[in-house]
Length: 254
Image (cartoon, rainbow, N blue to C red):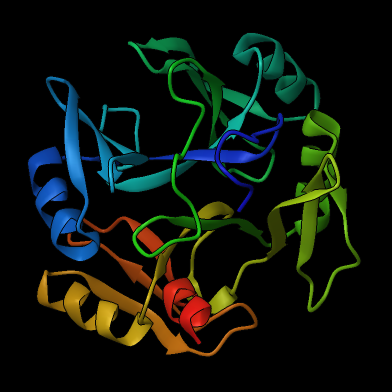
């Protein structure tokens, strides 16, 4: 993940959980990741860890998926970016709206049907803690047609790409790694989507905790190029990935 405060346009910078029961979600993620929550509205909150913002939680509206994590991409002007989204074959899902004391946002859908958000920084630039246990670690776009996805995000945000490996290409913004775009696994039975990854010290222990809290393990835990991973769902069905990150304190002490 890019470091906090260095969110160029097009970089995944923020994630929001929409769910039918925000109190239940706060209990689940508080126990899973030791998140604390700062209320920002009647059915909205910002999740924090060590005092830094890590995610948003809000009650799902009738037009939202029942329970889902949404990746937000940084932008300087949601309305102008939505114009580019439409010109590239995407569509509007929610007009630009103010998030009091945080920023300005909008929701869009790309030509493959993957929903994503646009985030214009206010007091919150995006995630204030990344690549640490209990924080955002990565975002990837998966679809049956990665070439079309790559063309769309290049046109809207100027993504550049490394040579694909096993169909997955690292996307870069301003020369820095931003996210990855690759093929969806047909076995999952899901369409195009952005998939949020959260870091953990130990994927196996965290999946055990997740099951005990009522969540579901879809695949894994299993080795992956960037750490041991598991595809999971919370107790309301919102899907995300757990990925092990190195213990930096232990590495520094070694």
